[in-house]
Amino acid sequence: MKARRIVTLISARILTAAALASMLALVAARAQQPASGVDFPATPAGKLARSLIEAINSGDRGRQLGFIKSGYSDSMLSESPLDEQVSELQRLYEQSGGFELRSIVDSTPELCRFLVRTKRGNIYVRMGVRAGKAQPDRLEAFGVRVVGSPESEKANTWPKEKMGGADAIKEIERRVERAAADDRFSGVVLIAKGNSVVFNKAYGMAEKAFGAPNKIDTKFNLGSMNKMFTSVAIAQLVQAGKLSYDDKLSKVLPDYPNKEVAEKVTIHHLLTHTSGLGDFFKPQFFQNREKYRNPRDYFPIFAADPLQFEPGTRWSYSNASFIVLGAVVEALSGENYFDYVREHIFKPAGMNDTASYSVEEVTPNLAVGYTRFGGNDPLGIEARRANWMSLPLKGSPAGGGYSTAPDLLKFSQALRGHKLLNADLSEKITSGKVETGPGGPARYAYGFFEEAKGGKSVRGHSGGAPGINSDLKIFWDGSYTVIVMGNYDPPAAQGLAGNIADFLAIQ
Image (cartoon, rainbow, N blue to C red; front, side, top):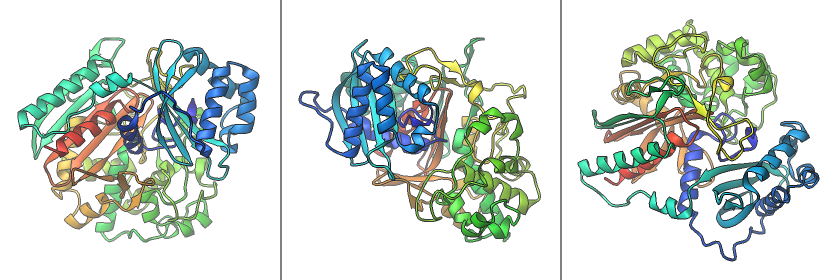
């Protein structure tokens, strides 16, 4: 359902994978409210949620069209033809037979999250509705995600008590194996205590057609995790005296096509997603993927766009910002971006299986992504499909490269061990600087998230897209590193990573 889906959407669109993980954790914690007497709240988002469910449940195309015209924001209306949008609601009705409200999970004036059950098949679904900022009486986004019944969700709740070291690892293994057995996870889990690996296992298939299993060193698509490497590259240029975080884009990239934007935006803004730049995932990108191989190739997609807000006034995840940062790396280093990160980050860290491989290349031991996004499956209950059609031709400074769990451990060790940057800059780029949402647990740094777990600082980044989901969580005190990489849709891997990190934080 394209970018309107806020629960099963890809990180590149509306929410980041990390923000999605924290949202889903909140949902899981509150989803056990009783169904009797439950009604939608009388808030803007609650009223829109009621109208949306009523439109879907009607099964009537005319009524659904009327709701779309009167209830969707201008931005939603512009995303696709009306007929396609009606068909999406029709398909939700066909798959569900209509929805019954079971509980309100979370509610603010702008956001309503709730649990419903399908009338056909008794499938439980978490839904979220967001009211627009400019148009509070209109729907800005909505999303759906199939979940277990309240009883099964309760049974899957992780322990809150401290266990012995070996028992804690056995508990993690038991829960990962259950997720894999239920086909909720496919990938690799690696846990290091200090610098010693205490758990590392692979699950599921890297290539289903040939029955090729995932292995401990299988290469998975990183999604947005490449932003960490771009941040380190920028920091190395700062350390070399070639750049300042306060520099305006006009100083370091004087030929940037939008002069007005270049005079307002700083390197700090770009790194923290506070620049006001948007995204490059637009129709022209997907229609001409072969054109986009290097950072500057992307400029025609977004450079002429006006800023979404004044730099520094808001946080809004921006892939375009990291494309621009990749161009900055090239301009100041005199090297191609991909050559730079290979020579100055991957090689010093000993990361021999990390690169932005092109889909045209024959790359050994590469996992195929399997997705339920897109197509005609809004509830995500049909068979998974290979994600080739949604992949960029090649990764970018914003994401889409490949790596392995062992390589990500090497990266985290090189970063904490100051092999890539001095101690001050290692701290600077990974420590949180801006809030990512009201009351959210994570703060964004420079290409890293920082969150608190059990009083400990946990830093890293996740990545998610159709058939892509991985997460790196580094306990900054050196106690643990959690790496979960997978080839299923979000939140398959990051949900596990979050649960494992929460559990280890109390050990």
